[in-house]
Image (cartoon, rainbow, N blue to C red; front, side, top):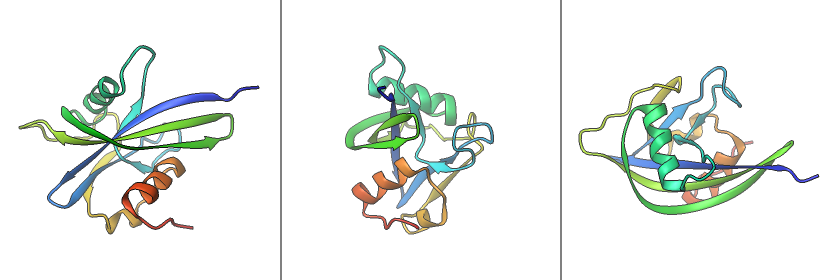
Length: 135
């Protein structure tokens, strides 16, 4: 039986040497873990449109999608996540705030190791950004 495929897009937003991360809600899949903000791509939606929609819904901000910076496939029990990462810039005057997430933070690359991320996000960070995997 074929596994279900979930296409996910995330934004890597850097400002003054810090990256924006968001904490999943208590009721989300993999609750309370941290992630780069983003979400699922809906049928008929482009990656870029999905990313802009998800960021408006989750952190109330508009972004400019700069470029695709990587992708990774992670296998979970019963489904596969196809994670696509994009470098993004906040729209002028746009300041993120938690909406459909529990919290947001601006952290340095060194501080990312202090936060628990889902396996798909962690492996992508390791591959693209040179972060060390945690046990």
